[in-house]
Image (cartoon, rainbow, N blue to C red; front, side):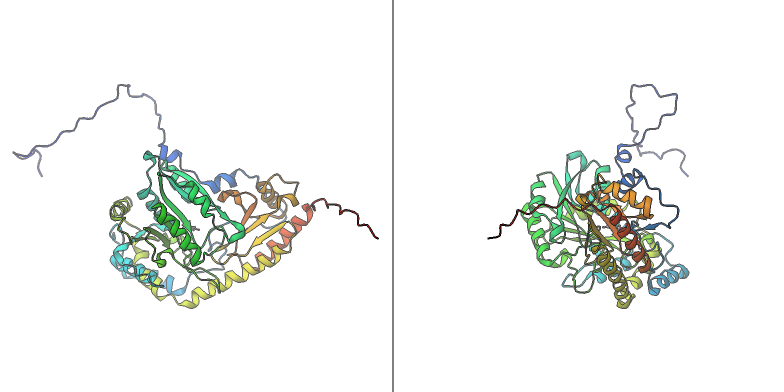
Length: 443
Ligand SMILES: *Cc1c(COP(=O)(O)O)cnc(C)c1O
């Protein structure tokens, strides 16, 4: 041990400038601006609702975006076995690299190499859930101190906003078009781009809309990004979670000259959201992302990498889970979606939008049919009060007049929930006053 510095070595002494203010003699611990600006929009909306269920009816929550809560959807045996094996073999108790273990990054690369896409392991960064992937992507591209903004969908998953605003990055919402399969309103997107726009976030398949975009639409989105030289952050957490007859197209597969950060993870398709394993794939066909790659590596060091037990199990999870597991999950989801679509479609004043993938269905509440309620928030509160059924109001995703229901509940519960919805709507439905037809003259 060296108690005194050896000769010929200078130790730099740093002097810090002290503020002139006297040190306080009372505890006063303020929180940072980042923390203050970090808001959970779903919680804020839900906490402000008066949500007292009817004590005579068991609550059905059609609101919870976690496919595991009802216990009807469970991960594949291959998935759980892989994790057990990893725990028992004791080889994955240490740190991985901050971007993840090579074998796990390889597995993601292989898993995502389809439809002509070739992902290399070095393009993959493992994160603590897809939320953390999105966090890194927004953080690396957008800078609040330079007044930058990002574009996010409306309606859309509120975490984009939570992440961006906590860093002082402005969020601009672009419209999705409900009557056109919730596609991006491209004119609206373009009108919101300026020199401070750091990224466009797109989400396909979509939460909350359940829409799956066509190749043609995605090409149009990519063209817009190329024209404006804005990189895309693609939230593809529902990658390949599409119903039969639909095809998932990754923006990475279209060969566009647009730099892309693709975010995904195990949470939804493998039914293990609590395992917190997500990824970013860097696609840089124009060589614009050299600094971004480095920046992402630096940012990944903030948590010294994600959970290595799950990483150790990943090769088996991603590459050995049988297709039959995925097919069964999709069959279950589409059956429940069909029930909801059919039953809600019969209810006057509501309009369901049939999803093509993901785990949700949007339902429009025709406000003119329910003059009793001022908005969708009042509608969902009263529905809870009378029928103990809770749907997330569209306001939680930035769009009033709608509610989002999950299609991951057991079928019987969906049937019951639809009956309750019908009861409720029949009670409050008011037909619009009929217009009188002009008298017909008979010759
Ligand atoms: C669930 C979800 C995520 C978050 O995924 P995690 O891996 O659990 O962090 C991200 N984006 C969308 C659209 C989601 O629905």
